[in-house]
Length: 280
View (cartoon, rainbow, N blue to C red):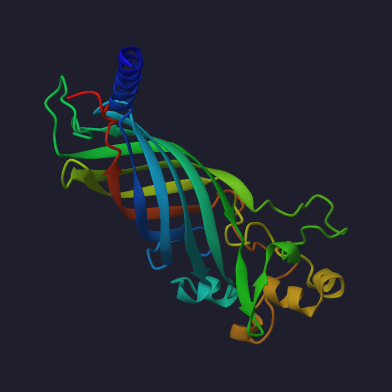
């Protein structure tokens, strides 16, 4: 009995040491996502949609943390709100869900007090921080047409997937982004904290909005894809009475990829270190 108790205490002690060294916290976050791309060349903050998710953070020490986060948001854009007349005439629009998973490193400017353990540094209950990392996300640009949601990627609105344009492939809806941003975190008590942050996602695609290159031949789109495809590729007739897109005419700016911004407020719950029942 004594040996069993001694072994249990040793195991508990090892687990406790390991838990104290890990310093995990987790929690939900909520906020919004903003779109920047061919339908928002002036970086207007108008095009924001809701977002929410969950994260798990590993605090290496009081300066450096690593965070795994997952969430879902909504982005949108509409030429009708553009200050440029030519874009209002272009009359393109879209909306898309964004589902992302992000791995990032955080650097605290102050030695942030993230556990109930003592520290060799002078801890603070708050700190501004910077973060950087990578994201894998899925998007699916759509529009409303005839009272229904229509997915744009399968339509090939710029000629993607049609035999007349063999060099154009349909873009992938799952891709990556480089993440960079900053925020502020603070302690409510020993177990609960909060943070507020904003981070830009520099994506590796120019098709968040289904707009990138030049207008395809409307005759090809009409006879190969149907009248809906021809219309959604160039809905300018609703503004000026007839389509303005000519084959090869600039439809979007292919020289720059699209981005989106994530702004969030979150709550953190610190995982309490394991305590051995044999320890007083």
